[in-house]
Length: 359
Ligand code: NAD
Image 1: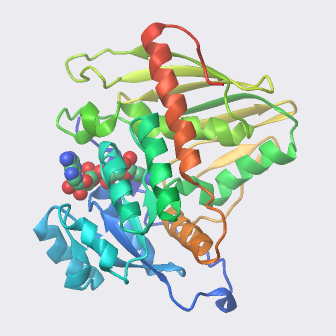
Image 2 (image 1 turned 135 degrees about the vertical axis):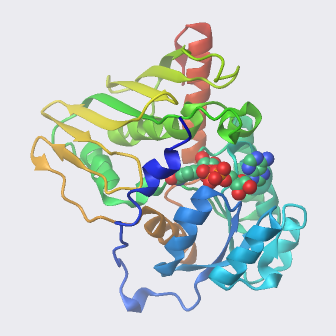
Image 3 (image 1 turned 45 degrees about the horizontal axis):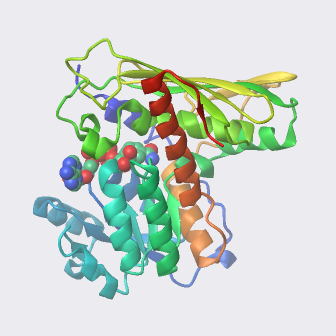
């Protein structure tokens, strides 16, 4: 079976619309200019189209290793030649006043290098999930942005959409009491051995790094807590397809300071996408919970009714609006680092068969 992730996620994009969330009076005099680095599937199908409706930013530049893509994008998005870079001359972007924000949408193993180079060029940075493929890389990326006095945000689009905000609110306001249990899982079939997602140097791991990160992040926002320990088990039924360093399926469990516990699965073997939160006096169930939507869910009080939004438009405007208004980033490097720490601990737990403490 071929990689169908693209189709799986793409299905929902067309039906999503952005909600206007600012009055005309709040609009900035100048929209921030964004350059996308890496013009693959996500940049092409999901990020670039978002700029049609963004109010705080616009697409002004691209960085690509493929000259043919530069030609297509130049025409489609009216991008001037002076705002088109390749991976070699990318650092010249420092001299370009049109570009305020660099958005790194490359394979996971390349995030570190390009975030460091973007920060050195003096540009605000957005970096796709997972933030990087090691804790050390994440820390270096945060330090580089701090030194350069630029902001760093991770592309956690769900933090900017209403269903996920409701899950976060329930953890805080405790409508159903304390959280007792979380189950969050995300997987899809991937069997293409040549895909960068199957090459450890570029991916940092298998489904855990790619979509398991959503399940980790969900456990944290559903409880409003940081886990204190993790146990994990990795299972390989097709070792011919999934090489060393690429898990096929992983199960993991976490404990939280309040006593809440969680259980998770991520896999390249099957479709799977859900979030369940068991509270003292009720529950919440979402499926789909993590793709581009429309997301769907119910609580003990009934169906979750929220506007259908375009995640990437709201995220881009959320991040760029915060930059313009000098507000703290909502999904900063720290948020990405926490998830990477947990995923690394889960890999260690699966390898050793032992519980790994996180604090
Ligand atoms: P993709 O394979 O479609 O695109 C990767 C891009 O990187 C391509 O343009 C490719 O040419 C370029 N590239 C440069 N050097 C490369 C190399 N050595 N090997 C392979 N490609 C190279 O991948 P994608 O799905 O667009 O994912 C890119 C990033 O975006 C990943 O970090 C991924 O986790 C993230 N992503 C996030 C979401 C989300 O919902 N937030 C969705 C999809 C992907």
